[in-house]
Length: 147
Length: 123
Image 1 (cartoon, helix red, strand yellow):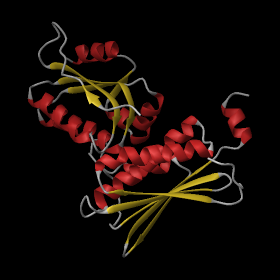
Image 2 (image 1 turned 120 degrees about the vertical axis):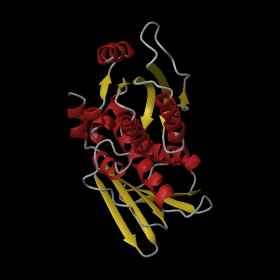
Image 3 (image 1 turned 180 degrees about the vertical axis):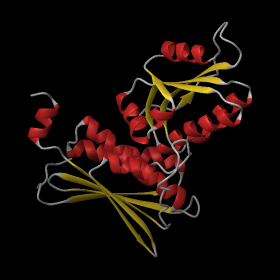
């Protein structure tokens, strides 16, 4: 990725069919952008994980069939990477009291745990999920490395 | 990126016919979790009541696969009771188990030997 003015956000987009087989493509896209942005290995894993959950949710609940499209974008600004996925469905809120052995309802909690901010925007045309991961400061990185 | 696989069900000599080991590797996501579910249900239907799910070679496991594993625990309960033990050595996969609370309902072991030892007691 060419050097860029850190004050100017840059955005890339990816549009895929709403198929399970596209999940690996979405993860690779998130991984590549996060690596170019300079997230460390742990942060990259967490960002990619949250992206996978958001795209999975879009495929499961936001598409009427496999010919629907899932629209993704990632915006990088000075210290923050923001992923957005938009679909045509209505976000399904998990049951707050679901037992730990239930089969579903963990995606949102995982996203919230792994990135710094999760934003859900539901409108009559569909749902947009935004996930933001902030690049650790040099001081935080040094502290994490035991310096 | 590691390709998903499930090995053939393995049994341990002299450990009883109700004990089985399933080895899974690679990235376990919404695309492949139906395969994991089918295999685990087949194992339980075949009468296995003590199951080691060896995830040592798993590098990624999403919420749908976590749901499949939780569902297998429920299935064992419905079948009259049983034990499921997980083997996990990957730090980030372990982190996912902790966030979802799966590690509070299924014991996670650092090696297959320890998982088998725990299930031998359970048997």
